[in-house]
Image (cartoon, rainbow, N blue to C red; front, top):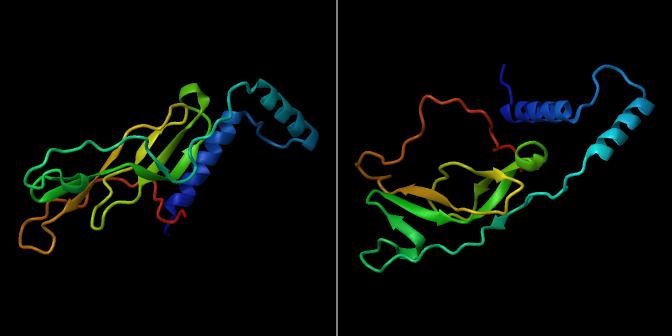
Length: 168
C-alpha cells in the first residue's frame, strides 16, 4: 500500500495545530465550541502578520566578483566540474502560522528562477517573525555527458519526510 507522504504530512500538521489551539476533545455542542472560540480569540494578543505567501525576491544584490578567467562570470562561481549560482528568488511551499519564536510560525521556500541545468540543493526556511534575509546556492554538474565521474550524486541512506512535488 502506497501512502501519499504530502497528505500524511498535512494531516500531522493540522492535528498539531488543533492540539496547540486547545480545542477540547470529544463531543461538544455548538454553543460550547462557540464559547471556546471566544476564549481563544480573547486570549490571542499577538500580531497576525503573515509571511510572504507567494514568490519573493530577497532585498540583496549578489556580490560582484573580480574579472578574470570566468570565475565570477554572470553570478556563476566556477569550481572546476561544479558551477554554483546565487539564487535570491523563492516560492513558498509550506508554512505554519503558530508556534516558534513569538508564536508566529515558520515558512519553507524553494528557489526559483535558476539558470537551465542547475539543481536545487535544499530549501530555504525561516521564522515568520523576522524580515526576509539570506540567499541560496544552486549547483550544476558540468561533467554530465562526459566520461568523468559525476560531481553531484543523488543522496543515499536518507528518509524523505515531506514531498512537495504534488503541491501547486
